[in-house]
Length: 124
Image (cartoon, rainbow, N blue to C red; front, side, top):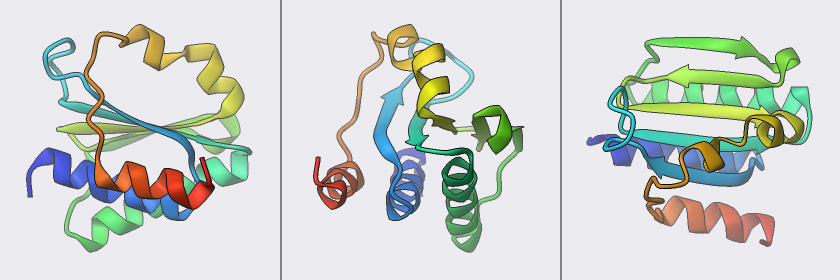
């Protein structure tokens, strides 16, 4: 599987747990340390934890383990680093504070089928 396929799997796992505002950024040309960011919001610390755990579990089932993870649900932000892509799961408040989409506004946003499905499931 190539990195964007793995990102799609992570999007699907996050979407299954009702993650909000799912965004994928292609940061390969502007960052250099990874190819993609997946950014997802949870409405509470508990949902942030649930989303992060679902992503890790799904990718582990598929044979991919994170290189490292940082943060806690209680801090409002969990980062899961898979090397070729990084998953950011944040509370809505922390997402507004850090505003990663603004920081990486020049990065292309691939429109994956899994993103469309997750949005449709949420009715947005």
